[in-house]
Image (cartoon, rainbow, N blue to C red; front, side, top):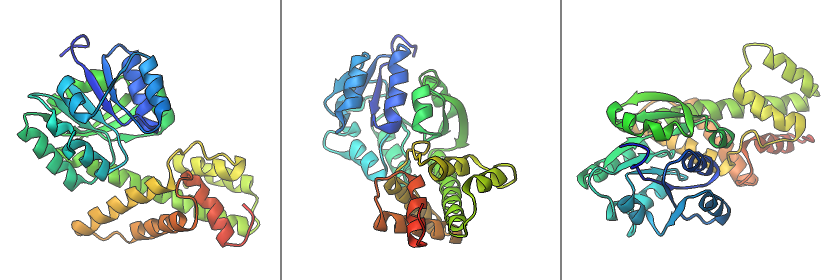
Length: 299
């Protein structure tokens, strides 16, 4: 299919999805989107030339390629299996690309259900942040047939500049969970270390300068540190609730294998504590604030 005759559908135009969809429509692809409880991004995209579908079945019926970018497994499955879900409207050859962070065992079932209806499936999760989604510079990992990815790559290139084939169907969603464990584990180590250093009376800027000059430096440390130094949590626009969801998926996957995941359990419990004791809708860097409070010091 070419740019002129491939119609693209998009489900989930939230923090990540809005930027992705914006870049698709602005680069000339016919785009239909599914309405969102937050009307602002929907209205913005319609203003840029997108059309709005009534439900997922309509998108699947009318589009050649449908992206799903929703919170997690329950939301993906609702959009697939629901009364007006994708399976109710999918036609022969339609491609479904799931960009969500979801459970790999669910991915395999979804892929099989789509195939049984004549559709085709890629797991296509993302890395980087909403800032890169708006810029069109996300990184994507994909599982499934490389030839199928080649069909959709001209569209994916609208919002991403890095592409990694992880293996067969479901492999990319597995890699995504491992990637997020490393990222969130690093974030929890950074927040705890900076909270302990704060209680010890260490100068925050001096700590930052030492860590960023050596082997302990990382992108995630620098993101967490912006909250400590500048009271800025916007460099990591990922809520504690979603962090908890991702770590729950990872620990569930490890238990099902089974595989030893002791560090993951500690990370999961730290995020659980933050979700229970604080604001679950706050961005992840705010876990530092909670740890300072628990340690009896001002942030």
